Length: 149
Image (cartoon, rainbow, N blue to C red; front, top):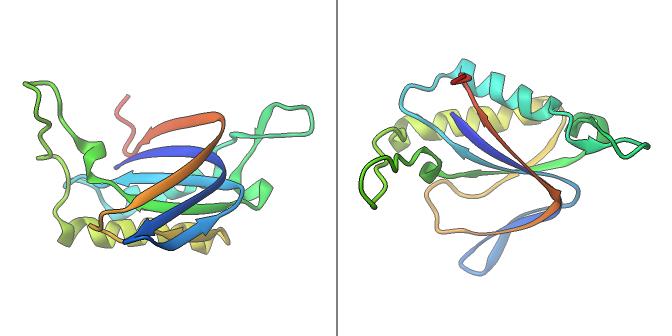
C-alpha cells in the first residue's frame, strides 16, 4: 500500500463538475492499493497517517499530528501510485490490486481513520476526479506499508 500524504489548508474532490468532498485544514491522502496488501496493512497505514507529526506547533516546528490539530482528511484512490516505470515509457500497473481487492482495503483504510474520530471524506473509487489541493508548506510525504526499507 502506498500513500502520498499532503498537508493542506483546504482540499476538494469533484466528479462531473460536482464537489463530492471538501475539507479545511488537514490531509489529502492519495492511496494506492497493491495486490499483496492486507487489512492489517490498511490499519497500520491509517494509524501512521493519523499520527504523523507534520503540523506545526506554537514554535513553528512540525510536532503535531492530524489527531492533535483535529484536522480533516480526504482519501482518494489512485492506482497509478503503483506504476512501474523501470522499463520503457509506458507505465505498468501490474502491481496494483484489482477492484475486488482494492475497494475493500480502501474502504477499510478510510473506516480506520473515521474510527480515530477524524472527519474523513472520499472521492469515488474508479471515477475520473478533479482533486484540488492547497498544499500547506508545501508538505508532501510518501508512505508505504508494509515499509519497503
